Length: 110
Image 1 (cartoon, rainbow, N blue to C red):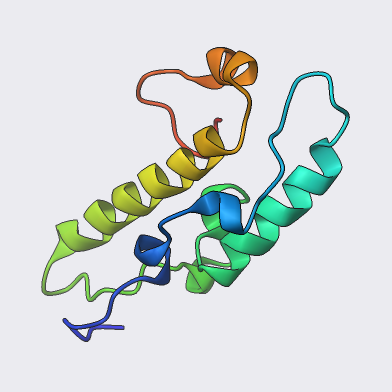
Image 2: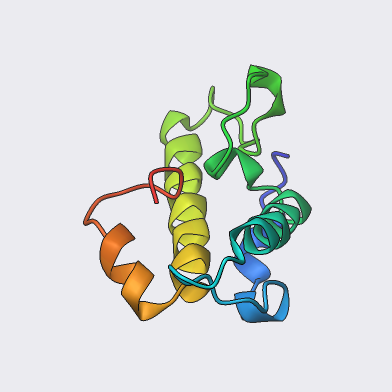
């Protein structure tokens, strides 16, 4: 979308725990449930490519016009990736956070 008034749905999420109420822990055996809820949330908010790369280049959630502002796609992608990364960090235990928190990492890496 090239509409300047369009707001990406992911930026409207104020509390990830409403959609992903499970806390992922190292020892609780709930990874499959947590992962499914997290992926559903990411698909609903159009950021699934941040955790599962798309094999279809046309399926990207970044939709700005790169011919008028080539840095806009990168800026939006980076912002959305930071949002998804914060969702991950907000739904895992402090113990697990200590193992995945790496400066400069992406949501997919986490």
